[in-house]
Image (cartoon, rainbow, N blue to C red; front, side):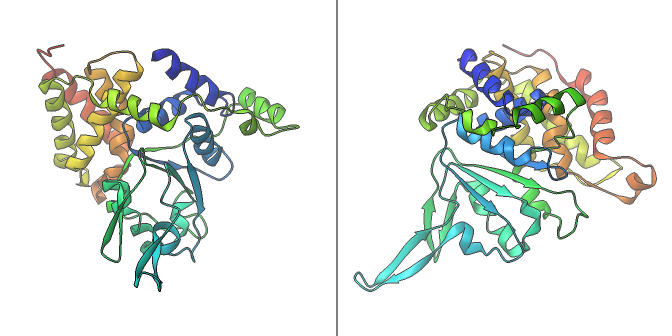
Length: 314
């Protein structure tokens, strides 16, 4: 199985140049069956990353370009009266897919953003009192431009909490940028990507990642780390229990990608900032001291890792 994981990553790397770590993190999140938020300035490859994963993983994909006039029914679908049966017939929205690419999600209204909450957490939608299960696997890969960009509005904390990780791609280095220019001189590299697994095979991989052994002391470590965010004098709102579960899911997927059937403390540590950073709400004291989420989480890691992890059974 490690070989197919490496093949998938290498295939994505033919399109996304110089961002191997980001590719690994997105793939880890997919295996953890979590939703991914990619935030960055336009043009650095956020949408291309999402489309590349959809193609290589053999997933049914739908893309929604979020705009101020996008309606909840465009995403979830709607019911229409069927005169033959005398009942309501459900007309599917874009949500009925394996991978939903929510492009520039912070350009639409709060009403439309909130339409995704049930789907992102419970993998189902409810229309006119009738619940419809989403296809498996179901993943949202959302992109957003930085807050403050023209026409954007911040996502509410309740929705941010439903993204397992939030990543920033950043600009490519000069050599990677040259590779991008050369590759796209005559054709789009996305066209040459081929599926390496099917949706059913991906489901099996997700199941294997979920079953990775996690010792109680590892769970304790994750709980202590997230609890520390709630007690930090710099934080107004710390990491929720949902965030703690997301951290453990990412750790399991990381162990699986590394070829282990058990989680070690490093799996927690390497995912801590990506899982927890967007879940924190800093207070005025943090702003006065010029502290950001990365600084606070780094300090928590330094103070917690040695004193908590002990006697882990593998």
